[in-house]
Image (cartoon, rainbow, N blue to C red; front, side):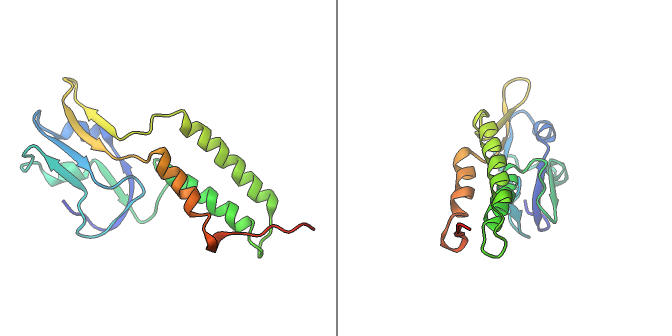
Length: 160
């Protein structure tokens, strides 16, 4: 199933649980925060789930023009990493802001480290798998921090 383009803002896992008949299941293709272009699939349907009403599936996902912090964990990390990098750039040279951003990254990493970061598997009351939601794991979060540390983003710190 494809939709109009936009950022994946939220996934209503409760709606996903109520969509399927007992022998059906679906997988939400993008993660929260991923851009979905026109014509790209939003769901993968399994076990012969061809008769599901598209409108019911679409109610389980919210798309919008921008990413938001409400359910998009990786977006918060991206913002903090960008703030730290820009603060250390020669044009801005604001080590206090960079340290504050790093402190917040540290705090978030500690919180995320205590959570189970596996794909969410939603089952009905009978234990039947209904939906699979892809969620970011610790490797994806660390990749955001590591990618931002490339040659183009390196800032130099000079002693005054």
